[in-house]
Length: 354
Image 1: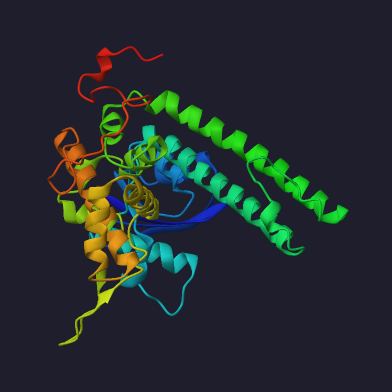
Image 2: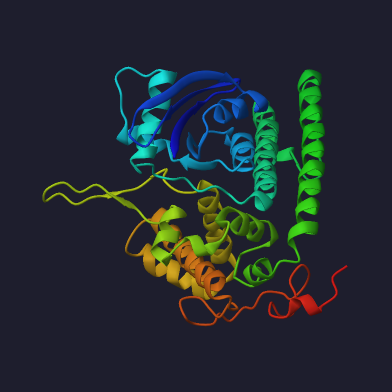
């Protein structure tokens, strides 16, 4: 078995290969050309195992190597940095370090999303970026109107341009409204595309019955989780969702550490958004929130509600069961049975969906 560390860049990669004894067999910079990379591994006869950091461009390299029977480990970049800090950092040293860690089984693996969900998940993430751009346009309209004290006459839904604005600023607002119209169209296109491919999914239909989880949130949770079976316990899942604090303990000092960036930020967004909506529409959940609010601040209380919703999602997906209630008790206000929800999430495939 040969162990290779690949330091991957935009247009090239540096590869270090060593054998089972730890001896370096080859070190070479290779252009990001599929044929050149395959020729490199073919020049060293035998079985290969490769590690590459979880950068933004690992998809194509993973697919290329795995399709040619070369096993690829995806290394968690943060933990590689923690293990292999070096004063001198070069491509050659990085690839050499990666190969050493791989050979000694010291790689902390990052999750590789399944190929069939990869495109759907990235499309949904693109929708979030489009929504953020639209929000930026909304804010820009208000900022322009505030300059001339006419923000009260702005109506984003009707795309009203205040009469008090000078012509140059009316022109700016007009352009912003046109951008919003384009973004609305693109967001709708993304949603329709995802709906056609995901609506007929049993897990998503179950999620749609959970309080405050709508269509887009259900899509996001399902795709970002990429298989609930990879989380052994609900604690592992909540930690991955960034819904539990970290710890900063030393000697007799015990402190919670909030604001950790470990985990999946998109699940954090999904469950936090769910919590905000649930407080508006469900009195039992609002009562639990107010109880927590008497003990702590608003941010912590909302996070506790988000954590409870995440627990519900975990057990629904893990056990393939229907939604039964919040904190073990049914809620008085049931969700509407209108589309895209079906009357019962169990046996829903028997229903005809246009």
